[in-house]
Amino acid sequence: MRKTILSSLALCIAFVMFAQPGSAITTNKKTAMDTSKYVIISTTFGDIKIKLYDETPLHRDNFLKLVKQGLFDSTLFHRIIPGFMIQGGDPNSKTAVQGQALGMGDVGYRIPAEFNKNLIHKRGVLAAARDGNPQKASSGCQFYITQGKKYSDAELQMFTSRKGNIWTEEQKNIYKEIGGTPMLDQDYTVFGEVVSGMDVVDKIIMEPKDQRDRPLKDISMTVKIVE
Image (tube, rainbow, N blue to C red; front, side):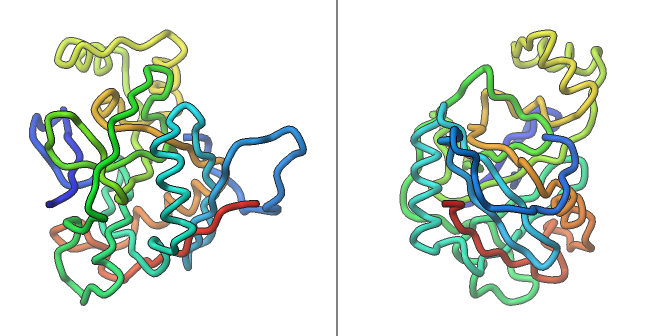
């Protein structure tokens, strides 16, 4: 089943699919008091370090399980859309030939949605892709990292009118000053955020691509847990 992201701007199902731009990672060590879980996605463009949220334990634990299994290693970032997101995690991409359509691979199960109004689609968040199932359950493996763009008060009000989303003043300021993809809030589960390496996301997203938004040059990854 094809894994997709619902774009409220288009009012249709679309394949998918903050933190300030990060610097290179200088250490993999966590502070003594930090009990959060971190992973590093390594690419030829550099490393992306991600913090997984404790507020979304089902998605956090599933992602860590797949990392330990090596499922993401040698998979591709198979969809890139400037001003929106980069998507990966399709197991079929490990053996895909150039130009092959991707986004349909899975691990045979979904993860129940874990929506949290405090976790918004600001620039640099990690979120789960999904198909059009009515429960909005997530793909068991496919994910995306948002790049997004900045939005005005009028645009945010438009999303509120269309979908009923209501943001705090602090959240509105994030979308206005930092950016993100607010149209996805409460439709796709956010379960982590980039803490360094957003410059790598920005490089990947600008690569040449085909009509399916697949990069013309394969961008593979390896993923490991930061111990």
